Image (tube, rainbow, N blue to C red; front, top):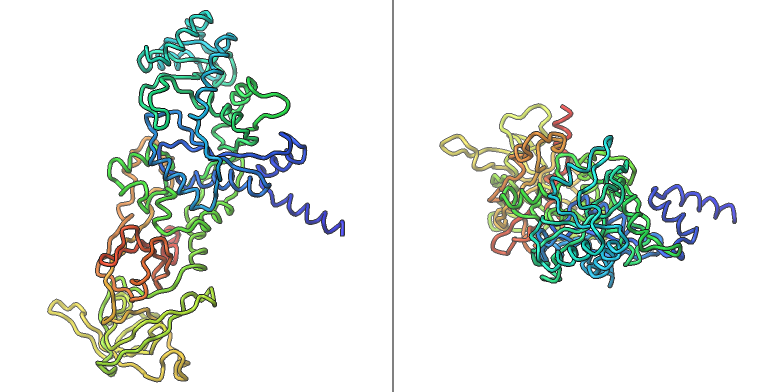
Length: 568
């Protein structure tokens, strides 16, 4: 028995990613009293994107896996860029992904009084000073990685003068940019972040939670570690760009921590996707310049955009599990994400019939006044998903692309004299076509074999082609939005000298009207409900969808046409 347990334990250890292994080791050693508390700390200055989803899955996932807790803490230290709209959207996105923070919702602004008092303490101890230089002068003074910085002429102000100036900064006596508070550390340090980093700057814009109480706001490097400490966070998990910030994180935490408790920063690689930009600044530009229809435009890499497009939480989480967590930056193929989406939608999506580019078929030997109700399988991947009813009549619609007058040799759809099966229905045979004055086909005439209806003995007769269709008499009109990748360049970030807007895919959205859908789809229009339009792709009703104006968003096609085209 002990050998079995040991093998299972080794298997569990092997399955842990490197962050989980660090957490497991810390818990085993009893650090922080054996307590585990992570946090997800978004800035409320935009909508979350799929890169944030990776961090969410890590922060909340680790806490779940090891029986700890995860806080949601809004890093609201820059009121100029922040908005309650973003706070609300972040909450919604996290819940949609399947995570919850309970009563542990915090804000960096909760700790403004403690941070301010700590800053005063550091001034009194000679560890911080007020600098009157401009941001440009400070940047130039910092030197380079190979050349030490130059001390500020204000670095050796007296404690009394620094206290007076800092308090007057917060009282609003000075204009924005006139003064900053800097930590006094080491202008010759090999780590550029140690060269007297800025702790506070003046901002006179009202804060969405604290109003006009504060005129000075802490910088990230000063606020973040201290907020972790005040909250009881044990593991501060972040992305690789914060590796050089970690010594400064520890430096400030040392001003508060003792041997009984201290938070630990751990870094993992960011999620980067092909044909996508992850820069919040660039995403905001797309929204503000009207190049997309908002933060939740289904072409955007935002979580709200993916939700509106029809991606499922499971597909996003499965994708993140697939790419994993490492210490090395990588560019992930969006095809992997799309594979995860297809895989999950194939499992959960209800099947339905829709004809995107319709042409009418008249079954000439079918009685004009006759109608039948056919039973259609909801999802062959889920045998207990049941069926729904679909009407059949003398006139139907099929895809125009499913008929050719002069087909190539291996065309297994409908052609003059050829037979196909209507999915769930009968075998039909083309006998004639009707054209308009311009030579365009407006009707296809067929006959049907009444013995071949699905479920009857004759239904075993085999033909090579099967088509989807919709009864013309019962069809409901709809609009579909065919979404594709937002950029037509694989890695827009790799071309910094080029305007990223020039790389937008002009075919990222096509709107098709006059689509014919079966009644079942029209009767179930809840946004976010996944459907597979047979032989076409996966679709979901849009947020703007109504009974009088039915709109479906294409989530994804059945196959990856981009990879196919790229490999030709």
